[in-house]
Image 1: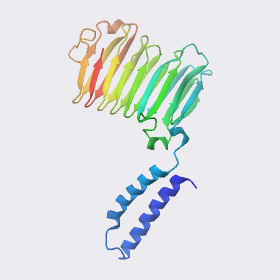
Image 2: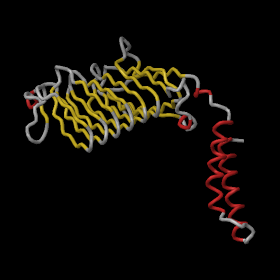
Image 3: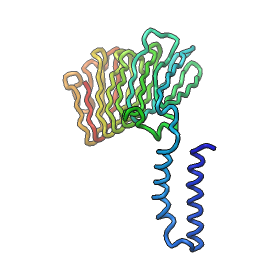
Image 4: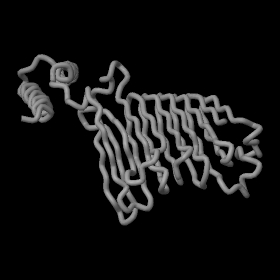
Length: 262
């Protein structure tokens, strides 16, 4: 029998019995007052005693072929741990190659567009600290040979996204209590929306890339190089942004952390 079904079935059965006894006047206490502490105790015991899934201790090698795709959308849902992403060197038949712990890849094709979604498996999300206390490690390489939309949803982790050689057209990044470094593409045109909570976010801009920056900040400390990106009263913008062949439009929404753009 599936352990998850057995556990949650037992919880529901226990709740039903307690409520029935309370309605019959056979309990000298509130069933609800007893149920939640007992449920937490049972849930904790289940986490400690259940068999650990294989992916909790072993990383998995994944490769995703490029086939005839002309563009791609890559979504990464990563929890606690470390994530690195860079360009795939010298390989023209693969879209993505990497080593990941606790990951489930989902791949589908819509015409010439390749849709790839990497996310933690259900059991893995309950065991974020499984590799010497460092969580799940994802080390990914993506082909630089086709246009890419990149979407990242990050948890309490350390992340380094080196997009300098990738053809990123759109970047969406949402991160919580994390330490994240993003190296923007060196060429091309695109946009980015970066949302961070209590995070330390560093954005490195190659010399070849012009940037326009809109900032919506809470209590975060935002540091932007005023020489490269002067403030014109509304946005921070490279002096040559309007006519630059390589430029990115960046919208930054940040809460309690720190942001540095250089």
